[in-house]
Structure formats: C-alpha cells, structure tokens
Length: 279
Image (cartoon, rainbow, N blue to C red; front, side, top):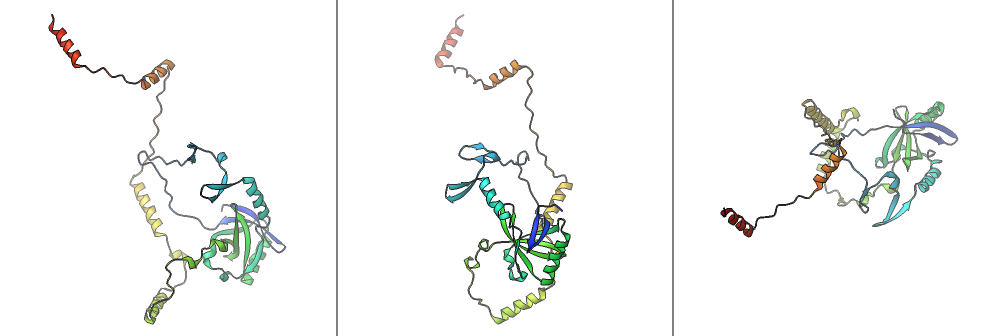
C-alpha cells in the first residue's frame, strides 16, 4: 500500500511514528477528451489571456482575490514559513471524545495509519482507544492544508479521518423552501414507519454495488471486443528537401502571389479581328 505521508502522532508524552495510507480510492471511469476529427487527446495549456502567450510553472504566482480583478500576491516562501510553524504541532492529539458526538456531515476522508517502527506505542494507543470507547481529536497538515482529524480503531488498525472545521459546514438554516411543520396525518406516519420496518436490515457493505460504473465498463468491454476502437492519426512528416536551393525556390514559389491575365477589352478584340481580316 502506497505511503502518502510520514510523521508521528503524539498524546501526552507518548510519540508514535506512523505512515498514512489512503483508505479509500476513487473508482470512477475516467474518460479522455479527444479531437473528434483525428482522435488525438486534447492538450490543455496555461495561457495568459492578456499577454496571449503560453506560460510555464516558473511564471505563475499565487494571488488571493480581494475584489473583482484586485489581488494580493503571496510568495511561496511566505506560505512555507506559516506551514512550518503549524507542522510542529500538526499531529498532536488535543482531545478525546465520543465518536457519536460528531455528526457524519463533518467527515471528509479516511486514511489508514501503520506503525513506522513504534509497534508498542501503536498498540498502546489502539488498546487505550478501544477500552475507553473514545476517539482522539488531532490536527494535521496534509497537502498544504491544516486538517482537523479523528483517530479511531477500525478492524484492529488505527484509522485517521479528516473532518471539516465548523466554518466549512454550511448552515442547514440557509437551505431554501424547507417546510416548518410536518403536515401529515397519523395514518401516513404509521404507514411510513411500517415501510421503514420492512426495509430495515443489518448493514452489509458488500451488498451494494455501483451499477452505473459496472454498466459503463461492460459497454467499454463490448466495444473493445467488437473492435470499435479508434486510433490517433499520426502527423504527416514534413517533406524532406535535400537540395537547399530547391527548398528555397519551393518556398518562394509557394508564397509568390498569383498574377491574373489581363481581361480582353472590346477594343483589343476588335483590333485582333481586324488584323485577322487583312491578308
């Protein structure tokens, strides 16, 4: 399993060297955007609309938009200094709480934590969390963003779940058109509860499948086996000119404006006819 972060988790005077591994993966079917004419993958370039030229990574700086079109430029060194100051405390467990106190809306991403040499300390935290039925609340810096995180036990493995800060969760009161009262009858409620009881079961994650993704993959496989494949059209190589003078002359001929023959006037036609009649 790929290691995406190395560091340590501490609570009190106990320090646990750990590695983070992504606990979930995105299995969406990825499509490339192709040019319909030649089936070449589309290239996305970074272009400055003002200068009308392509720019490289070295030409890009970070800017925070204060008002429309007005930015504050922040240098990478300035951000690095702030990041280094936070990282010293990033993985310290600051509180222990009950997991059920956190509403699921706060949860973001999950990471497995493996010991990086401190097996005894790892086992100590795992046992303490299990016996106390608590989870640890910590802060950690991941990909230049400070995260609030919950550390808990999942199938004998320490699991870290990043959670949103309160100001990142939108207020439910701002959702439009939510009815204030439930205008339903007792019979309707009883029927709804009966339906819920009939559909109630034990959660089995293996029971649920992504049917749309399965259908898309089956479609792709059917097209592949049916040889409905497209190939990128190769660029035609430019003609090789071995003779320098021939290449120069060809270039001149290609750019030379075409001259039009002068149109015959009636006077000219008349003279030609007269000349033709004299013998």
